[in-house]
Image (cartoon, rainbow, N blue to C red; front, side):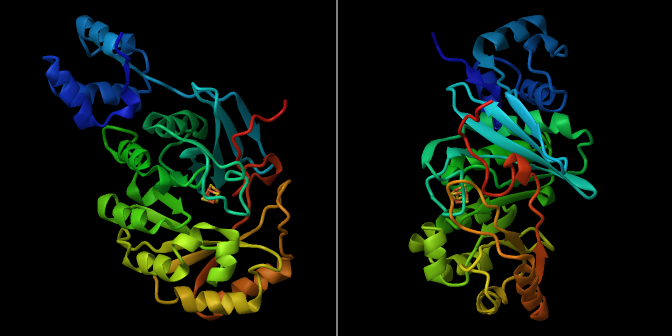
Length: 344
Ligand code: SF4
């Protein structure tokens, strides 16, 4: 028997092609996807603008997947972390973060991660597998139900995995998330975060220019290669050139994320070097005091050091925010997501 196609793996054009090849009207594709993404219907029986015979036929060809959280944990600060089981038994985590005036959904793109950044739990055991398009899209479908108001929702690809290492599935999922027939997010509310895969950054800029965050974390190659082995392949010079060339949406800047780690990258000298690196790029810097977690021997700097680092950047006209790590008490903060099943 032919395996059924998951509708959530398809772009509008792909669904149109399948329907037309079976003698159906092309416009039905848009109707089906609207039922699914905008009205939240996942049963063909519920798609009542379609004839009964078409609904029956669709049921024979397609499935509509969804994710249901196995566990939802809530932090003292209101951050919610969702643990989703996948069909093959793997687990992924997605986070919903309340912020002033809006909420942010942080989604995963891989189970595990092959890049092995020293400060990150997600990459500790390597890559298990890439997420499918539908598994990326379904995190948004599932979590937005918990968010209530949809108009103030931001979306960041900063969860488990390197989005650009799962390039094709990530970009296809983003097209679904951004399309008027899909989840209809605004480009302006979507940010992809990368550890710095230079060729894929350039490809993304040509194909789907969304806001870009680059996980920088160091002001020199030696420290960055220590913290992020990917730097040996794409050193700072190459990475920053790619950032300069990246075609940002109008009035947008690149975000540089900088995990501040005690004694590693948090000195005044590091701040001065960082200024030299980024001063000619339209950017803002997010300073993230490191979130300690078991099994990683790195430490968080004291608050004065963090403030000093920020002040040096400000004094040189670089916009720098200190990011409060939300959800640290439930291990939902940056670098703390994991695909290990937690003991209940
Ligand atoms: S920080 Fe991102 S790229 Fe680095 S190991 Fe973690 S998930 Fe992978």
